[in-house]
Image 1 (spheres, rainbow, N blue to C red):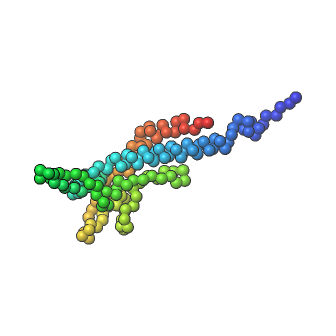
Image 2: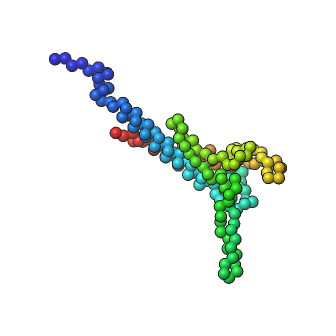
Image 3: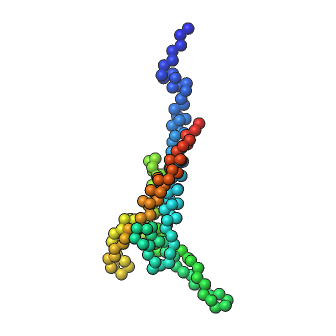
Amino acid sequence: MSVNFGIKSMKEIFFDREKIITSIDAATLKNLRHAGGYMRRVAVNSIKARPYGVSAPAGSPPFSHYTLKVRTTKRGKKKFSNVKGVGAANGIRNIQFGLENRAVIVGPLKHGSSVFSIPRVLEEGGQSKNSKGKTISIAPHPFMKPAMEKTLEQDKFAKLWQNSVRG
């Protein structure tokens, strides 16, 4: 009695190709979502809130600005509380991530319909016009590149992939 074991018959016996591919795809999407969420959180946390008129030092992440709400207590004392601003500077913390073609894209959402991109000018530096029409130079305040570097330098990204395909 002869038994013929060819490569094709062995693959059919030992490998469920569809199950492996499905498992790899699911693990890839899960890990990319985790990496994107972590990078988003690092970038948002690097942008600290400060009152209007206070600028971040060049080379450090930009500040998100807020307004001060003033209220008077029963004894006539003024109390100040932080209220998040509505302006473009507050929108810089609106960082999202999404998956596209097995890649994760992380970054701030475009704010308004301005000609220039506020996040890009803050990240890389450049020139812009203020509300009075005067051209101003803006020093670079990187926040996305350091977030990406922190995500990749820590072993967190590599550890996501360990033992991620099971089944």
